[in-house]
Image (cartoon, rainbow, N blue to C red):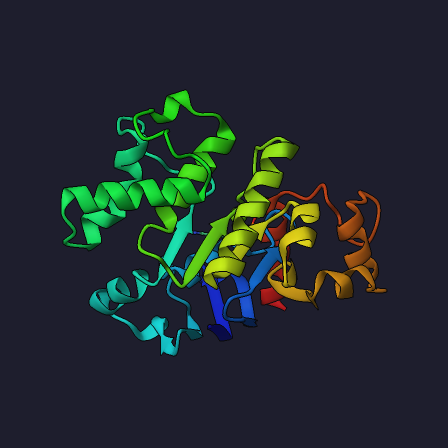
Length: 268
Ligand code: ADP
Ligand code: MG
């Protein structure tokens, strides 16, 4: 469904230049859940932003459903964007709008459906995330887990082929994480949605993923099924899966430190 080929991306110019992605390649299979995991500053958000067309690479290709989006103009991108839904990290709901109005947004924006049809579609989407009846609540009245589920209902508004999830379990309690995990799996298995999940919630990634791509400083250090990653003998992979603070990957590093290292790498 999605292929990333020879992607290069740097930020800044001259001696301030930071190379974040260097010949990055990845495949996301149709109907499957692929998670991208990695520490802070490893490049997860940068990849996601390229996939949704928010960043243009320095070079390389991103082929979504057979089309290279890196060469696309705004018109083409708008057409491709209808194929995917995005569940943003914060939920990104409009606080002044009701749940119904929030979920209806993409339907109002991208379709000519009449009001009563939109209302029925919103009900269906809310039903799918287990929140039918919440139509008239405002985001301030919802728990963190409910906000994510509403954001998901909105993301699937146009029956997308692909859903991008940005840290879907960030800030949630374990029970709410379990609910979101199950929803992601249900949508993938029942509706054959291709799911790309960026997360640092390793147990969740291990539960839901068909494939996991593990990043370290913009490079893939491991990829495969959760089982394959579990069986890995690479100390970095083992450390990551166990969440061990001691090991080859320095967890205490800030994004800024990575930036410095990447600068050194690109200078050499
Ligand atoms: P993650 O999402 O895995 O935490 P990011 O993709 O946000 O990592 O960042 C990867 C690296 O790219 C970091 O070193 C970060 O500082 C750098 N980076 C990301 N976006 C920008 C930007 N817009 N300008 C400059 N540097 C950036
Ligand atoms: Mg990020």
